[in-house]
Image (cartoon, rainbow, N blue to C red):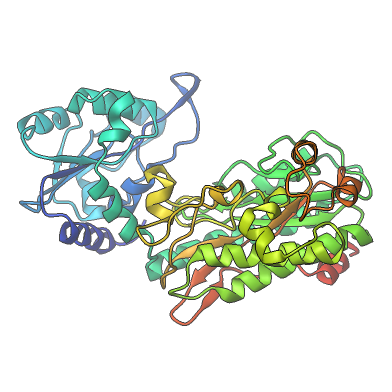
Length: 460
């Protein structure tokens, strides 16, 4: 948790943007796995963390944009709680930690909202069922309509603040990067024939736990990298496989890291693997070098797509005019996702508020083309943004066979050659990048990604 003045300043900035009504912030509660006392690890709502910093369950808060009043709602623990959980900070102590002066019991929230029912009450779109039930009780809006009536003004205001990372947040992100580096170093050393994927995934999660952290999302670690979000870890690694490892840490401060590396099982890339890997690496490095304030991330994405298309042309998998191939979306058979996303308190930062509010604006609109439509972040970059850059090349048999049957983009895709790669898998390389005043900075200690560096380290 940061100093109280950080949270007070953030709330004051929000008050300077909005000047009518009340903002209602609901913290998260414990979520039971199978019975109430057996819960998943607690994770606070990121917007509540951003403005109030308190990592405790059953809290809520309001900000009155007209009077300037701020109130924290919650309850002090009783003796039963103390027996099972130990002594806990009082609600007054918690409010002092985030700079809020007034506190009330959690049950007083309903009374407060009722007393102010004639005023505009701003809320953010809920993503948890229990908070949807609370919202229905407080505001009378059915869960099916809550996203529709969420405050667009509040969403845009929150995005405008959270998108630009403060110095303290960049330091927090660097802490997550340190853990992420150790996770990926562990994976590289363990990538050997005869090892189960689950052994490596478990060791990576163990690295997080040893630092008081958790994984920032379920670990993607697979020899079937052609499945973009593959969480199955049941395969045994074999000589000649490629192991795609996409994983990150959520540090105790709740800020996240997210990196992807692809390693050759056995320690050496085959010639075919090396050719594809070098194309992805070139796209990763040159896309990163483009990053600076004022350029749209959508243009960086298309630049990376052209590098991939040109590289695939050079080895006979694509053909024709590169610009036209990318314009029409032929490259998306090999890269069916966007170049990256925002990073921060969430590994896909603020996407609970709506991808288009986070990654797009009136100037930059989301594409409707297959593949490019999945680009989460397209808008102009600003100093303080943190984005991932994660190009990849994948050979997805079902997609290849479907497009070939439809004779789709046959002027750009050499299907006879592509069919030689049906069992190839996939390669992705991902780094976390801070947009600086004059350009960019890679966050964290560099995780090896050059072919020679990887092969040399794997031979040790």
